[in-house]
Length: 188
Image (tube, rainbow, N blue to C red):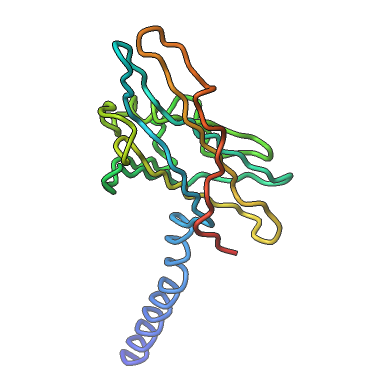
């Protein structure tokens, strides 16, 4: 009888362990999974011209182009011009910008700028001139989508804008137009 109980306990323990090995990794991966990564470039630099100073910053526009189903922005990682990771915004961190949407419904968009990253405390105040990579940032946007069969990947553009530090005026015409971010990983 005792031997049967030991065998039952051993079998039950084995089944629980097998179930945990099969189910838990899926749950853990689902919690941290992503379907694609977009890479964008940006700047956060001071430009000096005579006695006037201007700040060059980047505006990022992120859009869900799908007709059905939301896209979730899982994480945003920002790297400095030296290649150091300086910001990590998981989708549970709302310090990036009030109103920033981590879940984009169909055809919805959200924006962020390197100024927002400054305000969140992850980018140093801009210094130097925007040349030779000084003041440049790389932004990686990790995202996921539930319907894997038929979807458009997350779409994002970026554009540089200059702000006059004395007047606060924005000079969008100095921007070189909007540039598409590059899809560097797409799981299907």
